[in-house]
Length: 194
Image (cartoon, rainbow, N blue to C red; front, top):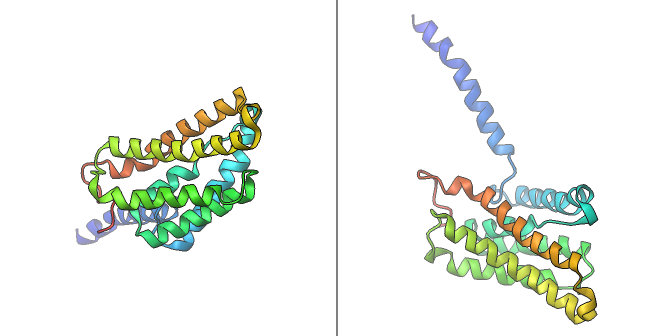
């Protein structure tokens, strides 16, 4: 009788191990290891700059890096969050034609603002997440619009460019809301480091 009980629990233990292994491999912001976070950030950048533009008409891009950094700024301490923001900014600086330093400035300001206000907000509700994603994406992409306007004037602000900026903001908010679902559950851990 005892042997039957022990053998009956083995498949459940195996399934628990498989589930834990899957959770460890799942790309997510704030994995607990800086090197994993950098690798995941490189994967997100590859998807954002290589895969998505080939699948969309006119080579439109969406923003996956900004919500990733928002969660990083909420979940990690200031130093690792700033370091990842500089890594992300470096990735975007290499791929863009805007003046050097644009993404470093915008991401550094974004991360530092979030680090300063994160303790004052309740992250158990959707509104703080939504507003934070929206404001971060709006800041980054309006900064891009200002730089394009200063460089090219109104000629650079085309219909396609405007649609692309709107889609980047909407995609950043949608991707961010998808990522934060695990912290919106009733019994979820507190996302802000104590």
